[in-house]
Length: 610
Image (cartoon, rainbow, N blue to C red; front, side):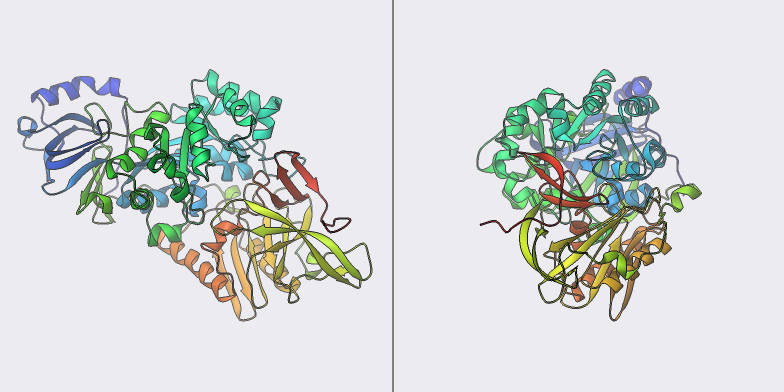
């Protein structure tokens, strides 16, 4: 049946909760006789029961018989663990290629009952309008969903890339008027701007602090860099760009929350978690997050259940791992009164787990006091949500790309040129800058002719400017003629094209433009298309279809020789102009370094380094 899921403030629920806890009013739902995962005390308590009134917990104790009435739903948890629903402390739903509703359908059966979502992907296409649309859709789901306002639209500044919108301090302040579920400022990727006093960036943080909200970080310089404390001084209190134990240690020592991610294509938990398991740091300011998991990996591996399970496999005690995905996350955003624990007065977001706790085997999910999933299947229907026509037509190329658009013209007729090359690193978000001597024939740079390199291009798709840049990338692995094009190209989300054949690159670019967004892989044997019509980022199809289409892209890339783990997600970051070291935007090559900050650099160098 269809339901409307509403979460009332605690203040509005007090009389009913107290009456239910006394036994004067029957509970709507009780869970009896389970092993309670108490994330507040760090204990497993046997023989515990929970009484629920509406969407909140009225009572936690050994016996809830006094609140069972004729209409009370009773769930026997004998032999099972009762744990708080899992929270994702940093996620971009658009990166799953799912709508919010389909994302909820995918993760609720896996035990994720809430999260903190930074919609800076759709914000780079449609600005505040895009964020508001996703917020409105969130409010129709059972999730305890909190929106963060995109802080960097564009991510690195208009001089470095072209986006479909712009967000500044005034827009940030406006978003906070939409409701308390607009919880804070999304990852402040322009960390050089913060450190060196950029008026726009500091203004956004000030608007956030004045509204009593929280600012999230994105600091990719080394944790030993003297500028990390400068960044923290601006009021940034959480950061997910942790890839080493030292990154976690330094952030925690500064009072920040360190977010350790295990996405589809970036595997940072194994190294970062040693800040706790080996260095012995208190875990209370450590969080587990996804950032992000594709629909394919949601289907094949899981969501926060997978991340918690992975952390436990790295030596974290099960209860501690659950804390890192529940109460720690809630405390980071000042919401521990409402979510993150099974305590009287808290929202009734609860999961039951079977078998060994370390297996994180979720068999039942309760969200806002309603059983929404059991044994991996949703038990309630979610309301549909319609996006407006303009959001379904967001790819605006002034002309159809041709093979000539991907030719790299050289300043010499023949010989060789020292060329900057982007080197992809598997399972990591950062890239390296290489200098490679490439041949020139008839004033054209030779790429992909047996040298293992590909061309990479970005075509501006928001405003029809015709902006275009072409560079060189290493590490794709194509062993035959192949190309991939995508409108998922963080964070400006222009059309990103990678290939070793100019004609196939043009065909791929036209395929995604004709589909009004998506991913296309083209080889000599055929075309694999993954349509993403909503802002060029999300599919309008159900989760199961999206996961299958995502897997088809992975298969096509693999068969063409690209064996990168979840290759599409890694490749989609090659235009992200704020992560070291070398990226490509519609305005050219962008280099990010601690010494020089963010700057545009030429494709060709004067000479090879010694």
